[in-house]
Amino acid sequence: MKLAAFIHSGRSGVGVVDEASGEIRPVQVSGMLALVEAAAAGGAPPTPTGAAIPLAEVALQAPLIPPRNVICVGKNYREHAREFAQSGFEAGAVKGAEIDEFPAVFTKPTSCIVGPGATVSLHPGVTSMVDYEVELAVVIGRGGRDIKRADAFDHIFGYTIVNDVTARDRQRNHKQWFLGKALDTFCPMGPWITTRDEVDAENLDVSCWVNGELRQSANTRDLIFDIPGLVETISAGMTLLPGDVISTGTPAGVGIGLKPPRFLKEGDVVRMAIQGLGEISNRFA
Image 1: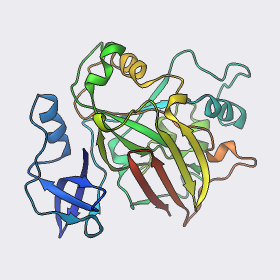
Image 2: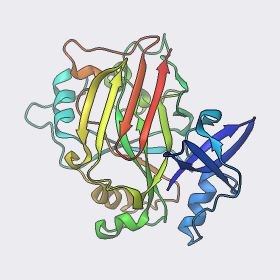
Image 3: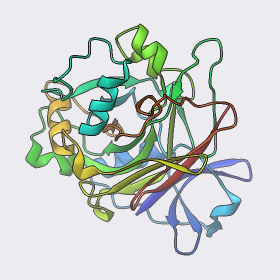
Image 4: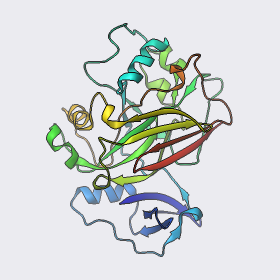
């Protein structure tokens, strides 16, 4: 099932997406987080109650605003870890030690989140080095603490796409990544949530284009720290909540990995797609 948040005729809603027919069927729920929480508590799957609406007539929104910061993982594809270490933008990079023993985890505030088609601010005067990162994001369903990897998928509601937009100069200069990741609009998310039963999350093609040029192309089977391992690590001693979002890292091909580096500029359009999850496109200005 694909579940989207949308606006139609000035009213917000949540609905079930039928890609084949290009329609969305509204469901009676107060919001996506409430739907996820109800499912985590053992509630029945949402049943469409309204008339189908053509997708072309709705404005898709970010599918979910989680209950707290988006939890993100850095350097989780080998080739990206190497390009980042060699770029000169990783503070303290050591040659030969590009692959970390443990996952690097940071967060982005919910004020970063925007939806498909939203304009992403380049924040001139704050940064001059804005970069893109396509990522598979996990949406937690049933919460829990100290979750074992064998049980991880039982705690996952579904998946979506995140663009972990990054101000590389701020990421480098401040050493900790938060300020480079946390600018308003720096987390496009969407186009909807695909429930976990619909895809094999450990074998999905991940792609990103900038102005039609393919920049990133990989598969989630290439993750250094896989999804069950991330859920186990992040939940160790910290309770995950229904609706928490874990963004699992980006593959090689980001702007700082190009020679010379290529940063986003006004008017650029970044399109991202993940197999089985749809695609999201945003303009930068």
